[in-house]
Image 1: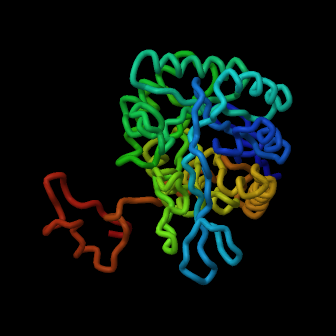
Image 2 (image 1 turned 60 degrees about the vertical axis):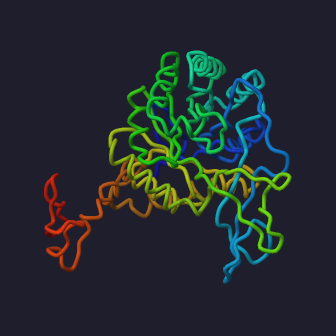
Image 3 (image 1 turned 30 degrees about the horizontal axis):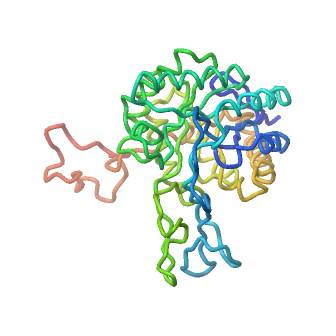
Length: 377
């Protein structure tokens, strides 16, 4: 019989589908609605020590393309298809002391569903590292099952916050170490895709003691300029700042980042994020080695918390397992990582005339040795 439950970082999930840290998970009501809808877990909107002030005006928009046409625009209109989401929203504008009693109330009401607290502090001093510990102790005392460290918000002004931490292996490591020194629950780290080599930052977080990595957060981007008005489609007083691109458009890019991670650290735990709206996309992450996946954009467009999305995900997984029952597959563990080793260096891809390919060198070798051989050579 198909079993949609899974164990990830030592925690049992009813299913491997989580509502990601995003605008919908800032509301305790939405979090409880998500559990009612059937999500295996919820990651809260990122919690900080201090209140933040978000921009005036729209914080999230959705990029669409005309069906059968070429027009890309954030203007909602009939006859168009979703391409991506875009937001420049900061972390929760509710501070820690507002969150703590609400987290505790959610866990009392839903003791068997997984609640993950996303947290963020600075990393530039001992004082800031202590802030990470204050946040950690407070949310775990409230009863959360795991903590996700936000090293990935793409639009933080401080050089020691958000994605600026996720681009710096030293800050990744010391911040994770500070949290692990006081954590009694699993610690996940959410990394930014906007880095030269995500494996370096992942290695630093694992050296710091991380139990899992979530990837990817949104990609840095700008909204489009309206050709009629010559203004950005999202702005405040005519000004715009880079925000984060998510949704279907980032699926191939996020999968590429995940493949790098799961190949480099085949025995570690990963939660896949980016472009998931149905089981087919989630399956790609599972086949690359992810133990859970997280959804944001698709859920936001489905009653804020995705009741239809989670229904399709769980039904899709059950149907997939039933379809492959003859292989003996009964759970995610039976097929997780099946295609991880299919991703290889470009030089290892077969060619009609393999002997003529020298990897950019005139004789097929350099001071590091011969070019890697591909299949069948």
